[in-house]
Image (cartoon, rainbow over all chains, first blue to last red; front, side, top):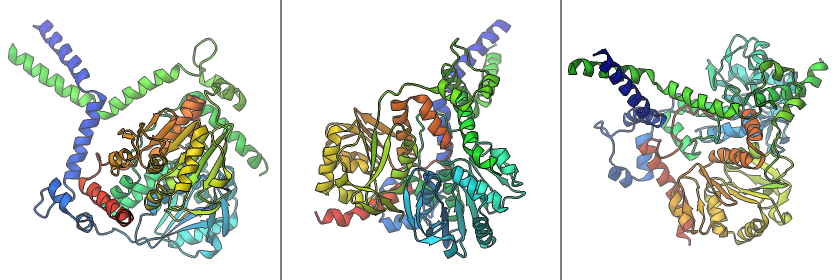
Length: 292
Length: 292
């Protein structure tokens, strides 16, 4: 009896292990998501639109189905650009936030004129920080050496404090959090930043590092390194304009990431690669820290 | 007896279901990946470096461990910019490819001067297509109406054919494949593009749509919409400079995407959102197609 039971249990366990593959779990998660989706954008009688009904709609009619009242109104978004900013830190969020309405988007240079990114992209900006008195949302991208230098730029930090006083959202991407920290607005707050010495780089400004892709502490939204700004921006649109609008943007950007290999975080990357990079960053900042 | 067996099986199945959660599957996949990783970047005796050994290395020493001979040499990469290109289509790949060595990267405008993206980013370019005779890698970003117009721009298409003759890689992101198609270089090839009427938009140029995030048919690399250019560019670096270098870039960009919701492909998005967008795109192109 015991033996039969043991064999049965082993057989079932084996079947179980084979049956419940990764694909299946993914499928189950997708099915759960479909249940959530099925509860949105229904006909007035609570049933989903048929394919035929959807195909028969005009664009305007389908927009009417999707309309949700915005939860907040953002009149102006300003993205700060400074020489040496990481291109994707600013352009990832811009590509998402640019679809927000009724919102004016401004690229704001440290000074008006041409700003050159770390990737040597030369961007003409119509505004310098002196031209801007108020923004509903301020976004600060990161970079490396120049970002560190910006943490000592008292004129810039004073401008950030001024804008932050009246902003609805104060946001950083990647090491942009170093600048927000230096401006003093993250003191006592939870935040995230690029993985490089993240805890230490936030602690010196009184902020507590949370190991998340993005996080918010009240109106202060911060993201992990570079590409995390895309995830955060979609979450911001989701919060402000609702899921339908955020889905529209994600679909437009075909934001269905499938990295060819998993190496975007030290927890996943080869250990030698991570250690090499930490040393590279340490060496890169050393001349600037030595001068202090 | 049968009853006891049935109960046992049900209990085990339940335990099984609870035990093998999504997190666990992810963990198992990660563990498998770690086995693969553990086979790279080892000491000459075939064992992994200890934390102490890694920490004791200089940056240069860790670079020596990681060094792999490049599989190919790319001297020049040119990214074509034209008014209305999607910012992320060009800036995503640039943020990845910019770290390639020993490679000169050029932003090439339809004409030299200022190019304005669909997101109203004004980029100064030092080269127009007339200034460029040869490139090892040509990258064509997508856009919408202006991309469609580019498929009729005979001067541009002739330049693409000229560059393609000697290129090692001819690459498109998103609807950039429409332009490559119109230039005639995708005829008889497998390719991918933005999901919007993807099959139809490639078929008219003799290309076969493959439903992938990115694909290559010989030297022709094409990606799905906008953000897919990031995945493709990492795969390109992996192929050309090896996994260590590609991992270094992914880690620098903290490319560990965690979309706040799954909506980056019509297979995943709410059906009403997808249908609305297809109608929006149809309406957007109609005036241009009607004129033909």
